[in-house]
Length: 314
Image (cartoon, rainbow, N blue to C red; front, side, top):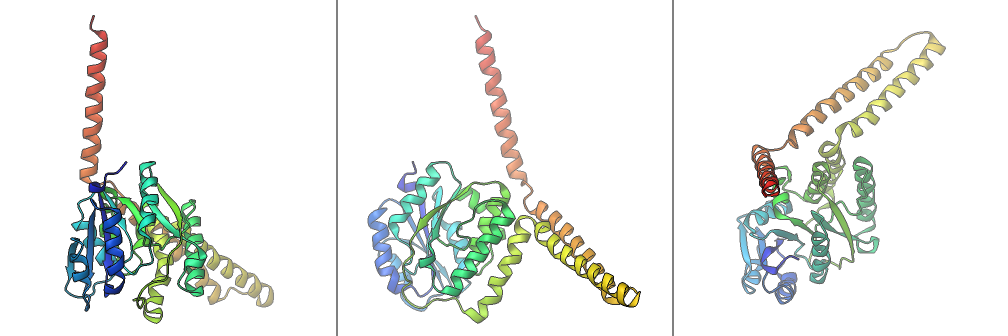
């Protein structure tokens, strides 16, 4: 079981003074020995003051850098063996943290709070998240119940392995989830009911809509690019083939449109191959990880030899 001293609760916040007044005291009361890290992402209100009242560690951003940037700053500043990420807008219940930690104690590397359909901010966001979940589940062959949830508990050492991959915007949950699946780390989901946020959302539909569409491509490029590029390549090939058959039957000729579609099919497939190689390089074990594995193997071998020697002694 994780002790309170080994847990760091990281809260990215931007102009969340109203919600932090209730959230932080509730966290301090429920987890008195845990570290609370509030990342003030360029707030213009008293967000930092609210955090200081409960002796939280405050990380200051001089200007708004984004939710993902705040999460990365909080992860770097935290000292706990387990990181708990939650929004500062009051949507997540402190009582649910214990349920996430139970899954880590059961052996999982990351536990994610999966929101019910009634917990989504809007109907549009709900349908978009369902689409992302289905796409990610197809890509990974694993059940992904909430790809974009910002409420999660994770082992700190494993989370920090992928800090360089995380974007500064709102799509950090997508990136870290796909990275964990790609690296072979275990992820589980805990059903939660998210409350209504306090204050105004920082997500701008028109400005951030394109970013959320890019999540689809990020899902593929972070896990298995060929699984995304191959269907697109096949679609262009079939369109070119269909166009060629039609023009051959009607005009007995091979048109430029068919040639363009065949060429596009080959190019898309080759792009997938290159992306697959890049993905392999991204998840290649670092020098430090290889040294750690070799050291563990040597230590295990030495221990085995000592045990064998002891058995052989009269």
